[in-house]
Amino acid sequence: MLRLSRGAKIGLGAIVAVVLIFMYTPLALVVMNSFNAARIASWPIKNVSLEWWGVAFTSQPIRDALWNSVVVASGATLIAMLLGTLVAFALQRYSFFGKETVNLLVILPIALPGIVTGVALSNTYNSILEPMGIHLGYFGMIVAHATFCIVMVFNNVLARLRRMSPNLQEASMDLGAGLWQTFRLVTFPQFRTAFIAGALLAFALSFDEVVVTIFTAPPGVDTLPLWIMNQMGRPNQASVVNVVATVVILASLIPVWLSQRLSRAEEGR
Amino acid sequence: MSVTDTVAEPSAPSKASGTAGLQTSGVTLRGVTKRFGDFTAVADLDLDVRPGEFFSMLGPSGSGKTTVLRMIAGFEPVTEGSISLGGADVTALAPFDRDVNTVFQDYALFPHLSIADNVAYGLKVRKVAKAERARAVQRALEQVRLSSVAERLPHQLSGGQRQRIALARALVLKPKVLLLDEPLGALDKQLREEMQVELKQIQREVGITFIFVTHDQEEALTLSDRVAVFNNGKVEQVGSPVEVYEQPATEFVAGFLGVSNLVGPEHASRIAGIDRLISIRPERVRLLPADAQLASDEAGVAATVVETVYTGANTRTIVETAEGLRLIASRQNDHRPGLSAGAQRGDRVVAAWTRDHASVVP
Image (cartoon, rainbow over all chains, first blue to last red; front, side):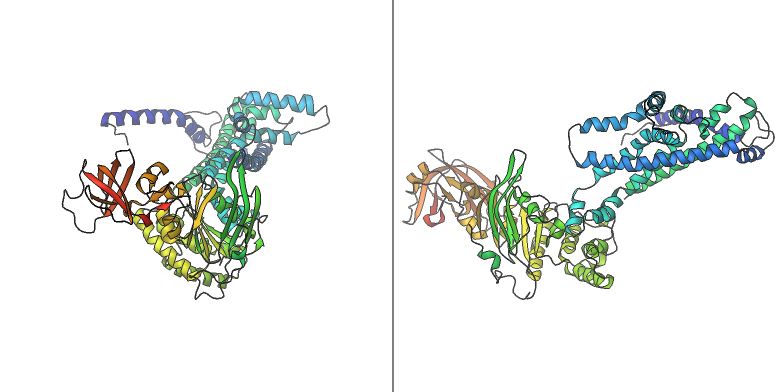
């Protein structure tokens, strides 16, 4: 390993500290302000209170938005788990014409600007499918989220499959197990953690997505991030927004943290 | 090569005594061809493996031996031809429907299952009752002397231990034929030699047919009842270790099994009076003083020492004749040589061998 001088260590440590402080102080402020009794976010906090949490939890629009976020993220994650795994298997196990292209096209949505994906899907839904009599509505929003969620599951599962000895499946069949038994007893346990880790990342990604949601949410449907955006023009709602933002932070943080822990436990073996 | 006597042969050669009642069978390949696209990996192969024998498939990498093993296991479909197991055609059967089991080169132990569960795997998918399963696993682990590691995970075992577990996992199912794909390849030399002895013992105990793939000629000679030497998708020779070593059927076999002096017809006719390609093993070549008289049953040629190589147990001396023929003579260091003993570079000698010891390569 590269050895660093004492000065370099201190210097690099300081840079890390500054960057992390810069990134996370604003988030910490949001969380703390959600307990601020004052209507307008102010510093320092004079009175700590759970008042705005209470307001948020009893607000029907916020509860609807939370429900929508959970449903959309869950739906998109389920689609991603299924399709991401299937495409990972296809690309890892078989060679076929256009394999590299498929690989690229699956990964592309994560790099595309959300606004492009959003506009493209919105146009497709409204100008092509709608006149044909196909009304996607709520499901259209879930599909839109799934386009970039697939990448998370796909990448994780693919990386795991690549490290797996192809002999394991042959050994299983050699010992008398059929295709399904082999998948259930040998193949799936091999990539299970990567699969779940990928699904958790997909959930987090969908839960806090806003741009694609703007373009694909049916009229009158809010997710939590969308609800926050709609409140930005109303400064007197700032404290409730802090509460909702805190919930969104947690809903993203926890899955990512779990996913990291899973991947690390796997590597430790 | 179209006789099928080997399949029905009731008495297995030598080893199977004392294992009466144990099911084993031979394997017969007829006209087996395997093509991958334009590449022919195995070409029109006929092979008869007798019940209960330790049969090695020896050859360099890419010679088709592993492909043949994988076709017998059922992992690779044959392009043409048929494979039968104990007389029953299994060509179209899936791996899980064939009464053969495989020990893989990388062992292919299931990393998420304990050693006991690995060994129990085949019994479990066959729905063997739990109590019976546990007894069988216990016996199998005892057979490979590894009962103590039953609860560990594969990555906690050494290479040699994993190899034995892979063996136990296959043997617990009492297959009719056991296929081994270079199972000792990943072990270091000393462990490999220990495992060779153990493998031979286990094969004697269980008495079933072992088909063993290796590229190590010494390993093949040590272990096998019979050896098939593969080259370029074809079998060059099938025979006992003594046969393939002493009477190589082709130039390739002579060269691949140990070191051999191949003497072309033009030299052979001059030296030994045989107008054919002949093969003489280095250990049969003696270096005599330049003025030595040859006996009537000996052939020999004057040569100059080019190089001597001391390898511990042996000393190899390379000599060259005036016509440019190079010969290797190997002598066992059966008494302690002086530090500068033996032939020196530039010495004039006669390289000689007993005529019987040279074999004509057809």
